[in-house]
Amino acid sequence: MTSTVEFQGAIHSPATSGCGTSSAGCSAASTDAAIAFSFEPTIAEFARVLAAAYTLPVTAAWIPLAPTAQFATVGFIAISLGAGAVPIDVLTGAPPLYLGVGGVYPTGFVGGEVLTFIVTQDIGVQVAALTRATVSVIFASTDQTAIQVTRRINAICMVVGLPALASVVGGQVQILGDLPGATEGVQITVANAVIGLPLGKGRGYGDAITVMRNWLLETNAVPGANFWVRGGAAPVNLLVAGT
Image 1: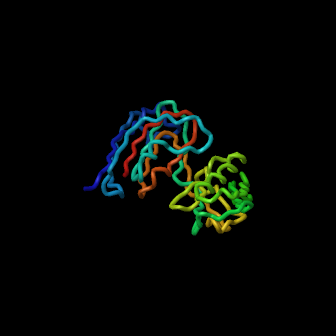
Image 2 (image 1 turned 60 degrees about the horizontal axis):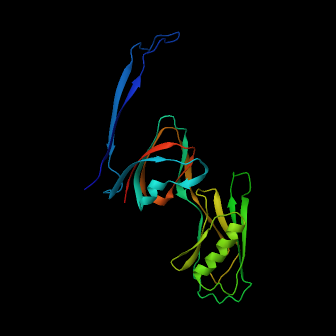
Image 3 (image 1 turned 180 degrees about the horizontal axis):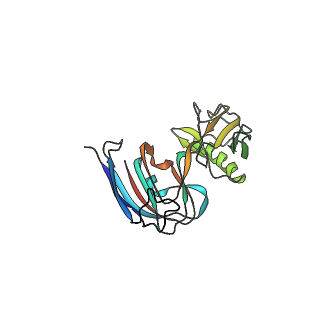
């Protein structure tokens, strides 16, 4: 079984009051044209379809598009802004991610062990990346498990004005940036081999577009958590299909 998405609509051109200096190609009568198309999405069968009205909070920062987060993967999404809504920005992508490899727990820390990473933001090819924040962590002897290590890291994140960026994934420490897109990076500048975080850099990915009124996208099974929005308190009508 293959799902098919179909659309129907019409384009209306009002009557013209004048055709300038030449009448060639002009018509005083109004014209209408019907449009319709359908396609078979890349996902063979949608397990879930959601049609919902959603009010985007006023935000200048990127926030997750809450309805799509209910999906493991999204194969199709359509957005229609309500009457009077201002344009919004939509981004399909993810923040930078740096996942520890080979971290050993318990760590055996005796106190004084360190880890430092910076969160950067590129603002153009002609300008060096800006450092948004530097997270310098000094571990204590009580930081033995992966959870205790992430708590120590997140405590310093909060001090320097960042949200909690560290978590435990598959038994390893992961550092995930707070902003999506290709402009943000997380760079380890002082490594800690015990918790599996060597020198290196993780970079986010994704591109943003501005939705003036309507937008639709057929995707190749993009994770539902990878849709982000920003803008003013806009009424948004959504059609999402996926798994």
